[in-house]
Every structure is written in C-alpha cells, then in structure tokens.
Length: 99
Image (cartoon, rainbow, N blue to C red; front, side):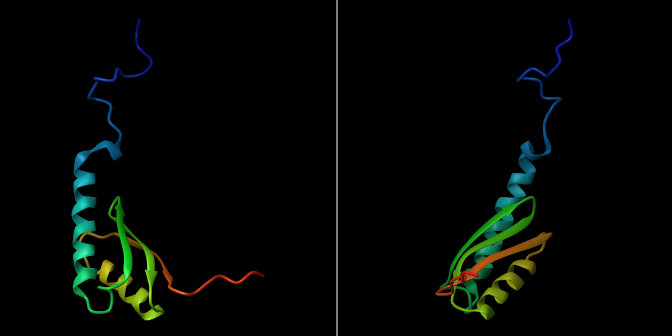
C-alpha cells in the first residue's frame, strides 16, 4: 500500500526553507548589515534590530530622525547579497495621531 505522505526520515522531500544554505546566508547577511550599521557614525548608537529572511533585510527599532532612518536603509542595501530591504524603523518620540 503506498503512503500518501513521505515518512519523516524520507530525505527526498524537503521544503526550500529547510535548506541549511538559505539559513546560513541569512545569518551571514544579518551579521554584515549589523556590522555596517555599528560602524557608521549616524547609526551606531541607535536602537536597530536587523533580521534577514530569504536575503531580505528587515530593520526594526527606534532612530533619532528621518535622516538616520534613511541612512540605515541605504547601508543595508549596500551589502552585497541583499535582495530587498524592509525599513520598518520608527522615529523616537514620534507617535501616530488618531484621525
């Protein structure tokens, strides 16, 4: 009787996100972006979290001003291997108003 799904130890069925090289590349890119942000005078003392998923850099946290937010995004884009940047940085002290 054929099995409808692969057995857990069947290595012929692996999803793309399970491939270790994707994870290793994301970790490498996150380290490079974080290093670049910590070396730049405009971003080094900001509260920036760097995450990378499928070579897409996601920047979150708080920064002092719009220029710093823009600079962080540009620094992330400059890292070789990055395919996209999601700049979700927020300005410190800036609150959304209710409409």
